[in-house]
Image 1: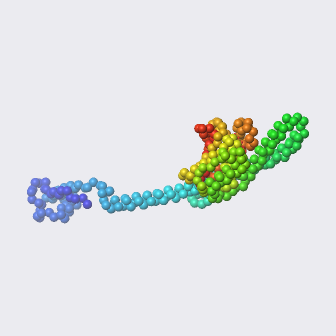
Image 2: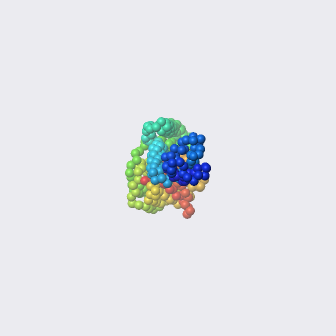
Image 3: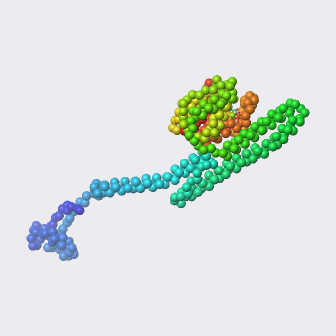
Length: 347
Ligand SMILES: Nc1ncnc2c1ncn2[C@@H]1O[C@H](COP(=O)(O)OP(=O)(O)OP(=O)(O)O)[C@@H](O)[C@H]1O
Ligand SMILES: [Mg+2]
């Protein structure tokens, strides 16, 4: 490919004529190059060739550009394919973790197939899920067993307390024993809930809320006026009906018990999450107790003073139920007084 920049012949003797035997043709010129130097002495010719090769610019070549584009595209497709293939199990793992968080008892195991590393990760995940499940079951079993076994001595103590001479002491003791009995029953119910896991079904959240409010009004006619519902006529969600009803009834019951009112507002789902606000007109919850009231058996002093019976399990059960649905409960004091309980629930 190089072009012959210059071709000049000359004889060192200064003879202007062009060598012996007439003008040189190309063959004889090049033949001279193959001769040893002594053979090139006069009357042979010197041949000087200068040539400029074009600079190497492969991307200017159309064939190179085509090959480059094709290879880049193919390489890109292969990389995307490989990354996708590698990421699929990661996504499956994320979904499985999410499912386990929502429902420890019924979450399906991860398939243990694929490349070695994925199988190892899946086995590790399934082992962990089994341990978590056993841990939860053991804890629930222990709780129910203690609750169950405490019932007999409590009954016995109640019988003995009846024989106490001091009237005042007897009344107080019986009240304490009643409280203990209520706590034990609540614990047993808690264990029973954890053991029986309902199936998720489609239900109408708006109707469910109105039913709970109607029931609350029937149970507490004095406060029927203070109960209200605002929101859509219907809102289908996927949920466990009995559990969700228990959770929401707990919250509405609290609003009535401690706040003398329950204004329920159902907001249409935003990014797949419906929100229920339950507002009351009570004292609210001091900010430092906002998380504490969710602890089992935790009751604030104000509620003790008001002599509202209760075991302190309501909020903890309600939060458990909502979290098992992938939602949550958030407390906030309203600027105008009273508590706002916000319930988030994926539809
Ligand atoms: N709407 C509210 N306004 C003010 N305080 C509240 C409100 N809801 C709950 N609390 C406080 O939080 C505590 C815990 O509530 P939680 O529902 O867990 O138990 P409880 O109502 O006392 O008993 P249970 O619900 O088990 O019958 C209550 O005792 C009360 O002090
Ligand atoms: Mg309660």
